[in-house]
Image 1 (cartoon, rainbow, N blue to C red):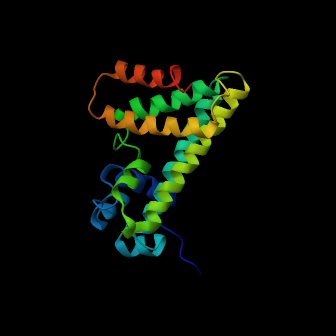
Image 2: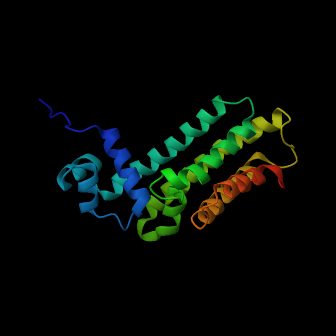
Length: 194
């Protein structure tokens, strides 16, 4: 008879996601993981293969949560561009107060890792591309509805949004003026290239 797991895998991955997001991959020790996810090293290795295996799952979970949030914002408005703006506001303003780290976990991972962890680095880059694709879908929909110009390719605009998110999240770490941050996000969608 097979042993049944004495833990909720999704709960473990969610807790590990927050820990890795807060501390980064290198600064997260096995002891940190043990304490936060309440699993012994042997169980972590048996379940995820390694610290890297668990990290890979947390990157996938972070991306999944990003897509879920984007879709939730889309379901709350008839405007694809307003949905994207709401997502960016959440990423920049709300996450400043509610997330383990104000930085995007994917961007933080790309900045932290080297070729020593090439597989994880590629996973983070792939996740960024996935989010870029989700942004591009909303932008294409907004163009089709006439909300924004068709002058630029959706992918080009999606990259612009991604760069703005990274920059604004970094800036938000130095700024406590929530009104200013909200205004800066709104400006992304008011001015060039939109």
